[in-house]
Length: 371
Image (cartoon, rainbow, N blue to C red; front, top):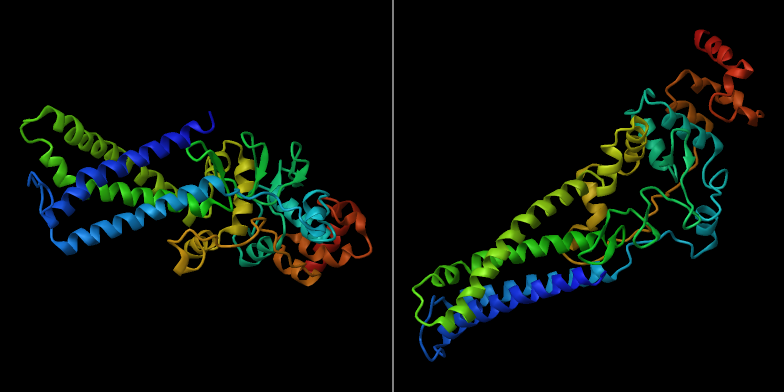
């Protein structure tokens, strides 16, 4: 059953291509060369027009086929475990203190657990969150997300696909039409597949419009109508339906790309009824939302490769790391607890949310503020 939808796509693509070529392009070429024995031309184009139409359509069609093969056959991106460093992070979950300080981890937990955390939009907080290796956490207490099925810790934007039964990096959705998950490594191919499918169906609509009008002439030969005219009408109507649907779907995914969101993040997080889920999404979204142009470059790569099925690079874990110093921590923390940083040294038991006040540090902080 998993191959049924891709097979249907292949049949559909082949049918549209076959009718467009046999009943539209070839008759125009014959009309240009005068090789049609019946000399019944529905349209006699110029040589330049025929060459441009033929070359442009086959270029778009070739890119469409390439993107379909790459989107369906490329792996969507899985949690890396090839080297010791990756295994330490994603299998053992050894983030603290190896890849982030306890202080950084506690600050993220505090931000996640507080729906009204002050200073969320400040540049310092944004810079901090973009430097933390794992910002996206589960529940409201800020624990690292762990997949019980894969027995691995999840990088940011990673989700477990029940169909593939694996964790997918930057998972967007599982697409039955390509029988594959759409994730970090093949999202560009999927996006270009939608783009070139839209271009090809639009090209068919425009290029075959004269042939469509010609199909409604009085029926003289029933066999010619059934074998030539009727397929043109059916393919044109199917192309019209596909063009409208693809335009909507492509617009949706372009909007997601510009906003640095996936389908899962939009449906299950941003629009969730649980305020803590929405808050955690907003916190994590700060990390990988760099503005519409940078978001586009992140998905499509350098400008000259935007329309080519070339992987833009990256490992998909969003785990770039730079440790925070105590001084930096004091600058980014907008609450009264910022002045508690010096009190943390030599007191590891204070290095957890809410523990500072039990040692009288809050009073010490107020005294320091009033001094």
